[in-house]
Length: 451
Image (cartoon, rainbow, N blue to C red; front, side):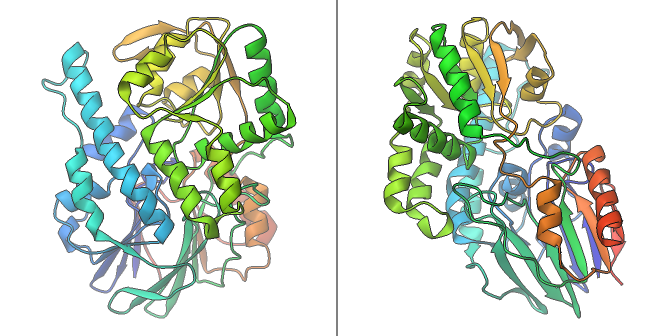
């Protein structure tokens, strides 16, 4: 049995793990690289394994850095099933076509404006490629054992994080493995706690916040303070947001703030078709989170949905205080870039970063204090206030990870992945010091024999 790390090794993006069990080949997660250009270029490189030779794919959740390579995998010859939870399948139904659509739009815009070095600029895959991949999705409920291929069985357990997110337990060849996926936080107001991990021989654990703790502060209060002070100076708040999970969490806190009178009664716009669809899915899958159906509907009704591109453009003509929540969360693409161009130059406005900003993204640059960023081939000045809410995260910090693992019998080997190098090594050290476990940080492309 061998395990290869084809992504999320030394970085938080591009999750792909190849598990070889005799002649069987399984891919756990199938994500796109994001952030630095040298990472994004890896999306264009052929996989070390031919897609047609894979027997099965298992997805931990629907975020693009875990699922976004799937359309290309199918386009390049993969013909098997893609196992995931029902919630993940529902979100992939909207996330993957949207990913293809955004890539088509970005390529078209680059060609029209002439700022790409490529002639012509092409999308990695298009919307139709993503639609063609959706029939491969095979649903399996939490806690249900299934056989993705002969001699291998697996099951999903709740990981928190976002709707449908799971850890994946795999039994094969007399050995048991656990892929943590992206772990959520304990006592989240919307998502359930991560399910306790079972005893395993090999553990692959994420380390996004392996070197950090979330601030001990109320994200609702922080959000209310930003909105209130921005509105007081006549400005608007632009919140780049992940369409799935984060957008709905922001609406939850804004809904509660309005109920409690914690912010002015100003208009709120959700300007992301994908986030709108994800909000509707939240209302349907009430068994996978803490909100009742009525509570979910009330939260989603907090915002005016902006479906059409023309209505999105019209928002930039509005001058009164308001809140715009728009994707993408790290300012890597989507409608939020047009709002950024229109609003960043006004010192009355605020750009509120409400999630993790991977290195190499515009969000990370703003968070580091950049006073200009490049958008659509041109630099724009940033005179608006740039604020961050560090406590509003869907990822477990290192204390949450240790809490999740506390009481677990020692695995033979632990692989620390899905983290920048500093974060991954910090968590590795903590696992050794706290539990006396053998833990390593694998390299990208490394192939390990599981004895």
